[in-house]
Image 1 (cartoon, rainbow, N blue to C red):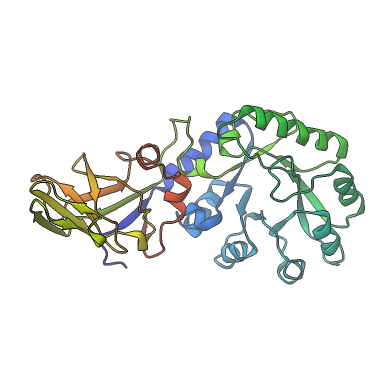
Image 2: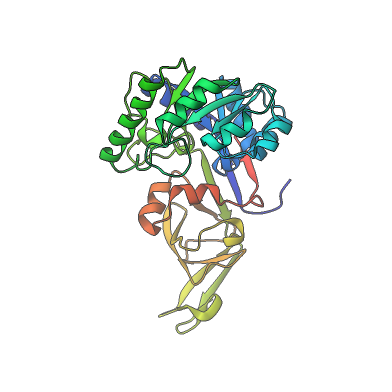
Length: 344
C-alpha cells in the first residue's frame, strides 16, 4: 500500500492489444522484451500477463533479470541478450534460460561446460557493440558445439530513421544465414521500429520492445500502457519579482498562481520536462524540478487535489518528445521504484 498522491497506472489490456497488433501485422512470432523492469512497467506483472497470452520467449538483458523472473514463477523461455560470465552460466544454467553467444572467445569458454546449454548466436552486422562479425568464427561455433544452438539474430543500429543502414545490415545477416546453412529454430532481426521494414524469407520472429508499451514513431494505432499522475498539494500566489524554486532560476514578471505537486527527479522525472495537464489544459513547469516536488504555473481554475497528468492519453510520449526532446525510452525506464504501480 502506498500513501503517495503520485502513482503510475499500467494498463495490461493495452499491453496485450499491442502484442497482438504486432503479431497480426508482421505474421511473425513476437518475442517480448521485458528488460529494465519491463521498460519501467514492472517485469513481474508484465511477464505474467504475456505468459497467459502464450508468448514463446521473454527477453531480458542480464542473468540477474532472468533469475528474478524465474524465482517469481515465470515458466516461459527467457533469452538473455547480454554477456554472461561463463562461470555464472555453468552455475545458473536451467532449461528455461537461453544464452546469447556474443563472441567466439565466449563460445570457446562455455563449450568446455559439460551440461547442455540453449544458445542463440548473435551476428554483428554493423552495430559493432557485441556479436560475431566474421563468417569463419560463426562456422567454427556451428561446427564445434555440443550445445543446442536454437537461434540466430542481429540488431539494427538505425531502424528508427535510416532504411539504407537497415537494408545494408539485413543483407549482411542474410548472407550469414545462407552461408551457415543451419536449421535454426528461430531467426530474428527486427525490433519495434524495423517490424514492418525488415523483410526476409528467413526471419520467423521479431523482438518487440518499446512498441509493446505503446510507442512507435510512425505507428498511431498502438495503445499507451503507462500513465503517470499526481495531485496538487499546495497553491500559492506569487507576486511580481518573487522567485520560484532552487537558485532563483525563475522570477515572476507579474502576479501568478503556483501549484506544487509531489513528484520530482527522485521519482525519475527528467528535469527537462516542460508541461503537465490539469483539467484538460496544459500548464508550464516553472523553476527547477526538485527531488520530490515541482512547481506549476496555473490559473484560478486549478484547485487543491486536482489530478495532474504527467503522462497520459492527453500528454503522450510523442508530445513530451516534441516539447522537451526526451526520448520515450527515458520517460519509461527511469521511473523510480518509489512510484507505486497500479495494474488495471
